[in-house]
Length: 125
Image (cartoon, rainbow, N blue to C red; front, side, top):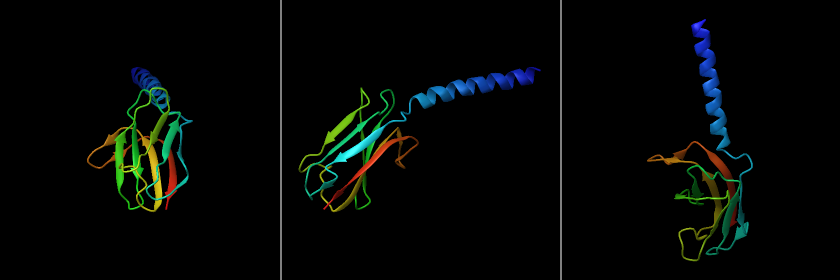
């Protein structure tokens, strides 16, 4: 009987933890880039809504040449907006698809993450 009580207590504790963990991942997070098609060297805006406000948040940019840039992102209200500027690292300097992912904590040196909140992309050229 003690073994059964221990198993039930463990399941209740695990269920409580799972409810807290899933509350940190918003189901309605979304991201968009505008304009959707940008000229080389042009500026663009990346925005998101529905992001977590109480968790580590990063923006990962995937460039057409396969390189990536990971930068911390902060959201106090679930929203985020970034305007690239001419001459900045985020400028659309090469032709092809740019992908933007809002993710949780990034593990280094591999640059991997276990939570992905929203993804969007744009074309440059």
